[in-house]
Image (cartoon, rainbow, N blue to C red):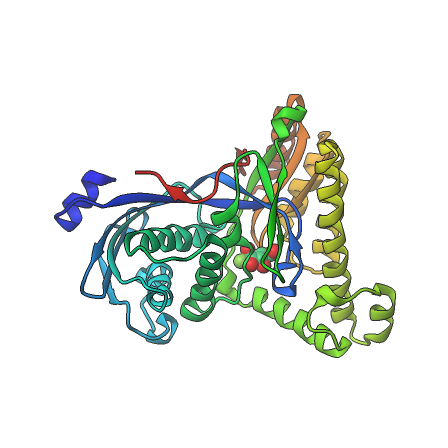
Length: 379
Ligand code: GAF
C-alpha cells in the first residue's frame, strides 16, 4: 500500500491501520434496542494507509472504487444532505467519520483504502471502513479517544453523515474484539467483556456462507424494523425493548400482531445471547448449534427478515449434519453462519452447494471464520 499511496499522493504514508469485518454469533437486532450481542472479528477487513493534512481537507482513494480521488472538507455538514453521486457514495463513510471526529481533535488526511471483505455480504464492510478511518485519524492527530467511544463516534458518522440508522454493534466488534474470543456487548451501558470462542479447539468449524443475495442497510427495511421496535417500546411504556421483563404480559397488551412478533424476537434473542455466553463459558461450544437454530427461526418467523437463499442454506446445512445455523446481520440478504463438526464441513458445504444448484442460484461462497483481533495499527 505504501508504494501506491506515494504514487497517488506524492508522499509517503505515516502509517497503515486495519479494521476487521465481523460475524455476529448471536444477538441480532438487539443493539438498537439497548440489548445484548455477541459478535467476533474476522481476519478479513479494511486497511487504510494515511498521512495527515494540515488544511482541513480529507482526500480518499479506494482500490475497490476505481482509484479516483474524492476530496472534501472536514468542516462540512452531513454528507447525506450534499447529494453525492452514486459513484462516490462509498466515500461518505470515511469523510463522514472525519467530519464527526473533527469535534474531537482530529483534522484532514490523505487516505488510501483497500479491502478484502466482500461487500453486501453482511460482514460489516461499512463499519470496517469507518473504524479503520477513525483509528487512523485518531492516531495521526493524537486525539485521546478510547476505543468504545470511537465506536460510538463511527456509529454516529453512519447515522448522521451517511443516513443509515444502524446500532453500535458492528463498530464495537471491529474496534474491541480480540483473537480467540467473541465480545459480549451490552449496548445500553456500552460495557463489553470477552468470551472465549475458538471453534477449532472444540473440533468444530464455523462456516460463513455468502448467500449471494446482496444486502443494503440503506434500503429502508432495516429502518422500518427499528421504527417498529421503538413503537412497541413506546406502547409498552418502556425506554427500550431491553426493559421488557414480562414477555407474556407484553404480548398480551399489544394489539398489533406485527409489533407482538418484533417484541417476541428481541426479548427472546437477548435471552439467547445470555444462554450462548453461558455455554461458551462452560466449554459447551457444540451446544451453541441449538441457539443458532432458534435465533434463525425467530429472525425468519417473528422478525421476518430472512430471505430464501438463507433459509435454504440453513436447511441444507442441517440436513447434511451441521449442528446449527442462522442468518447474520441486518437481514434481507448477506450471509449465513453454520456450526459443524470439522470433519463434516466438506459434506455441509457440498449439501448447500447442491441445493443452490437445484434451485438454479449463483453458487454460494464459503469462508471459515476464525475469531480474530480487532482494529489496530499494522505499519
Ligand atoms: C446491521 C447493523 F448495522 C447493526 O447495528 C445491527 O443492528 C445488525 O444489523 C442487526 O443485528 O449490521
